[in-house]
Amino acid sequence: MTGLMQHAAKFVDLTEGRGTRVNVADTPILLVRQGDKVHAFSADCPHAGAPLEEGAVCNGRIVCPWHKGTFAIADGSVVEPPPLAGLKRYPVTVENGNVLVSPQEQAQASPPPLPTPDTRTMAVIGAGAAGAAACATLRGAGFNGRLLLIGREHGMPYDRTALSKFVLAGDMPREKIPPLLPDDFLSTQRIQRVEAEVMKLDAVEKRIGLQNELTLNYDAALICTGGIVKPMDVRGSNLRRVFTLRSRDDAATILESLDGLRKALIVGASFIGLEVASSLRKRGMDVTIVAPGKVPLGSQFGSELGRMFQRLHEKNGVVFRMESKVKAFLGDGVVREAELESGERLPAEVVIVGTGVRPATDFLKGVLLADDGGIPVDSSMQAAPGLYAAGDIAQFPLPRSDTTLRIEHWRVAQQHARVAALNMAGGNEHYTGVPYFWTYHFGKRFEYLGHASEHDEVVIDGDLDTQAFIAHLMKDGLVAAAVACDREAPTARLAEAMRSTLTLAQARSAAG
Ligand SMILES: Cc1cc2nc3c(=O)[nH]c(=O)nc-3n(C[C@H](O)[C@H](O)[C@H](O)COP(=O)(O)OP(=O)(O)OC[C@H]3O[C@@H](n4cnc5c(N)ncnc54)[C@H](O)[C@@H]3O)c2cc1C
Image 1 (tube, rainbow, N blue to C red):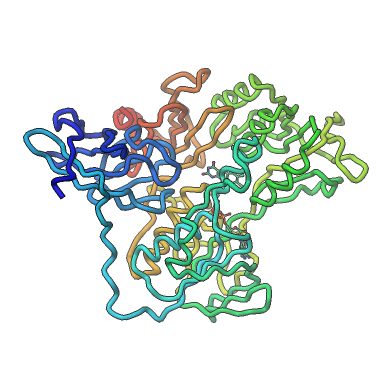
Image 2: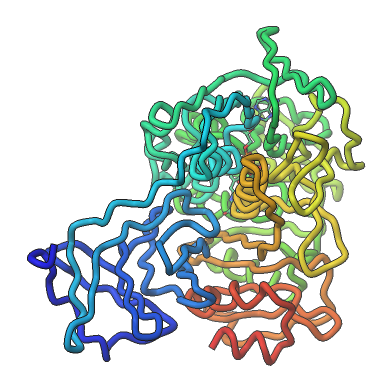
């Protein structure tokens, strides 16, 4: 083994608090110093390839700069998603102040085998963000019984967040959308993929009814069926080329219709509406956004940040009709115009409606749903005996607050799923994570950490106009959430620090 060891760095050149990237025999390796020890891992995040040396190292964790996934320094294993696989480890030693590393990967420790094969059946319903995370976690935790992944979309779970950012922009062909799990994951991990719609889940009988009238019994189930887009209830919303966007198939249908079209109208100035605007501008289309609020995202972030998003979009040619509502779509089978409540008519050769989703839970029997259709869970993500819920549908207790709510964020869905799956496998985990969301507009990536249902002040460090800032959303003297752009390493540190409640001074000091 020592024969393969090669000089990688001087120990004194390694700083605690961040990793250092080196190349050993053309293998990119992240060196992480912890006291007088050094660890060596693969240097890029297995989720989306972020360079991990640009993130942070704190609380015994390596934090990814892009989507804030975390890995344990001790062994590179996943602590929090979006990564669903751990980092590769490399043998490393320190001799006479020199750090020596072998580029030959160290074998991963496998979970201890269970004493007897597990005879239970676990069902994961919904093959999206949370479903993929749950399957990876259940097998990673050593559950070796029957595992079903049921979902109505075709094929492997994929990265839905790319649809509005890259697929509609023409930057990522539909068939290149990254799958969430390796291609052979289902077969190597003995996961039975059932491509079908669940019509009924009886939580008392622990029975699932599928669209083809098949029934399946389970011992424990996780429901993670995400959102169903809310269609618009106005005249003409059934005209051709009035679309919503949730799935890969929706994106394909929209793309197929765009040839030769110039004028797009987007209803809703939420993240998805704005991302679609950014993508369609990139294709050279004229884009108008119609939305009821004073500024985009004003109810989430307040007017100052909302105006910043609006200015960025306007600088790139997007036209806004804020404080406006669509009264009808007009056309002869195909949409041609939108009529606003003010009477104004706007040309619209294609319309994308981004007015939100509702929880996909109509099939659930035996559990009392929340008013909005969400599934109430406790901090272990349990809804009823043997039944868990995760992701967009879960109404969960927000850590460090007295609020229960649903949050429609990719990483939160996967955090939930990880907690639920560990509990299904016999653990005693609770959701204590920091919510995290990212969004992408005209080449700028914005991050949102924490959750502020309401805030009383926004304190901005940096410059909104050049999109280089951290904005603290304050509530009762504490940082409830932060919005940031071009501050990836500071927000990696902040994401870790926000596991405790923070004053503004503490948040600033943590971000560094
Ligand atoms: C275009 C777009 C862009 C987004 N961008 C971002 C972003 O940048 N950052 C971010 O944090 N979040 C983003 N989101 C939100 C994020 O995708 C969701 O919060 C996340 O996917 C929720 O995960 P989930 O597992 O709960 O549901 P999903 O990922 O939606 O998966 C649910 C699955 O269950 C299936 N299903 C539903 N009902 C049934 C049934 N009865 N039977 C069988 N299967 C069923 C669905 O078809 C779906 O495949 C975006 C969403 C969209 C649509």
